[in-house]
Length: 127
Image (cartoon, rainbow, N blue to C red; front, side):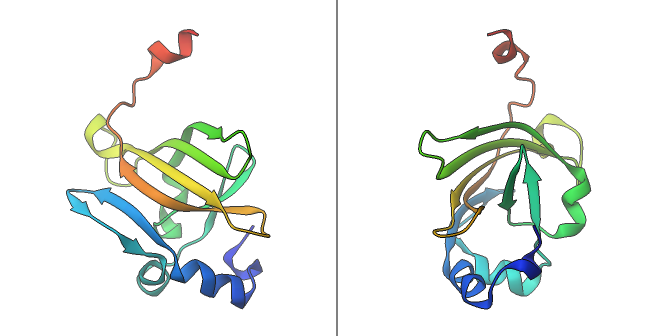
C-alpha cells in the first residue's frame, strides 16, 4: 500500500491524530500533521500488515521487524523492530510501536513510538 492510495479525507483524519513518542530523550505528544509536513512518510508492510510509522520513507530499507503481535480483536498491533539507519548498536536501533487500525480501512497508524533497548530477546524465542 502507498500513501497515494489513501483518500484525501482519510489523510486529513490521519494528520489530526497524535502519537506518543520518546526518541533520543525528546518526548511527545507529536502530531502526524508535522510528519506529513516535514517528512515523506510511507507505509511499510510488517508481517502482512500495512503500517504507517513516523519516519521518512528513505529509512524503510533499514527496518527489520522482530515481532509483530496483533491484538485479539485485530484492531491493534504491537511491533518490535530494528532500525539501523543511524547505528547498529543496542542503544540506537531498537524500537517499539503500537499501531491502531484506522476505522473502515485496512491499515494501521502508530499511536506509540518509543526507543526499545532489548534487542537480544533470544531468551524469549526458547518458548
